[in-house]
Length: 288
Ligand code: A3P
Image 1 (cartoon, rainbow, N blue to C red):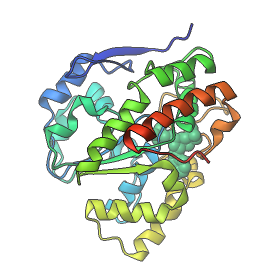
Image 2: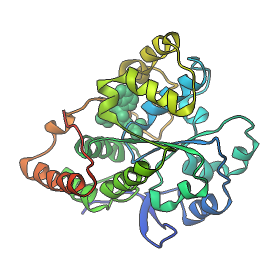
Image 3: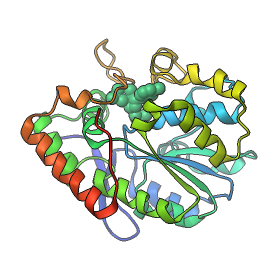
Image 4: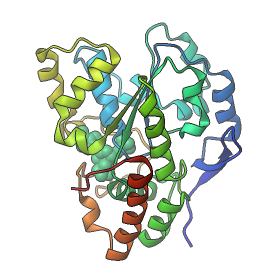
């Protein structure tokens, strides 16, 4: 039997979700009740391990004219529900400039509905690579400490038994809303790999940042996997990670690593899920 540390929290519709252990119902209810979403707020929204940090770095550099600064990314773009759990909401009220947040909250937690004028950048990653990345994350993060087999993990991923609920619902709910909302920019991790300059330009345009060729030339080298993995400002070294050389949060940063992990049968189950997403919502992913 597999285990990992978590809480169980319900969304406003009463659906239960497993969340990282420090996110209690009171913390989440506090966000939903008391957190004022401003018109110019920006939320980088993802299912975990989908390229959140990468997008944080792009947004940070775009909006700070290419200057990394002294703080690491979790300080400049805080993880909303984690920061709320540890520091409360008051520090966010003090911010006088445009605010940027990272969140993994599913659509049904209704952050979006609190102020649809705010902007949401949603990054989705193909579920096979996302599952592999999450498997290492949940196993190597000593506070979450997933213990169990990869086979069980795949089953939990598909059925929604891991943190932040069912991947297919998380992604499809934000995707559907993005079809009719100009304030949600829906992006894919695989497109970031294929065309980082094009995606950075899209993000700049979405945020109203005037990105000339100089800014683009300056920031792109600072958003590569190698550069981000070696910098303590971007490599998630602040996470509660197992301290050994084999495990690190910026692990491989590739499209297609799933091929080193999935059996034919596991792949088949993922394919069924992906065909459903494609048929129901027209949502498709690249896998290599
Ligand atoms: P892997 O575990 O496959 O390496 P998140 O930031 O949402 O937690 O996502 C983490 C995943 O994004 C990790 O995937 C990490 O390596 C990858 N990633 C982070 N920065 C990246 C970059 N600049 N280029 C490519 N992948 C990146």
